[in-house]
View (cartoon, rainbow, N blue to C red):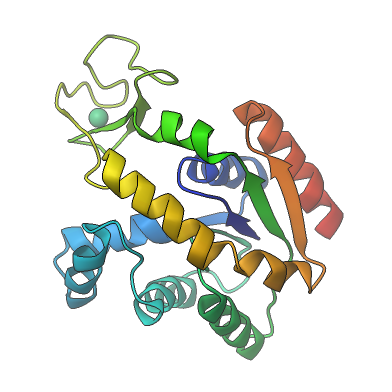
Length: 215
Ligand SMILES: [Zn+2]
């Protein structure tokens, strides 16, 4: 399954919840790339240049990081792809690579949400410096003020791609570069839309129903 949605639509959260509930493997391109950046690999260094400027990483870099992980993992696993493919070129490349392995995309789920709602959501995000747990000033504060729920650290950081200017850039990129993959999947009868302004658990339930349909 492919999860499509603008930054701030909650697709990462949904992918994690679905991973736990249906046992599929969640592959987040953002996370995979951040791992490469942390490891200072050549792939990571290239990716950092683009991500720090709020831009998409080149297609070849995104494809490589995802395919490497799939090839190293369980060949029978079901995958939830989050943040990939992001462009029509990546979508075509993914179909080609899956086809070579006798696999295919089951569903493409679009989490739909208005830009104004997204801007509000995105400007409040922050994360624990030590363990990476994500928070939000309006929607998900730590239980004890300024202390990470997961690891107890007291250091937090606003993600460098969450400033107002990069948010504008990222939403612009989503509409110009990613939104065109929607008709790509629609034409194949694979696209289903889910209302991203509903509660997190309602969105999860809707996606589960959609996937139950795939079998
Ligand atoms: Zn933490």
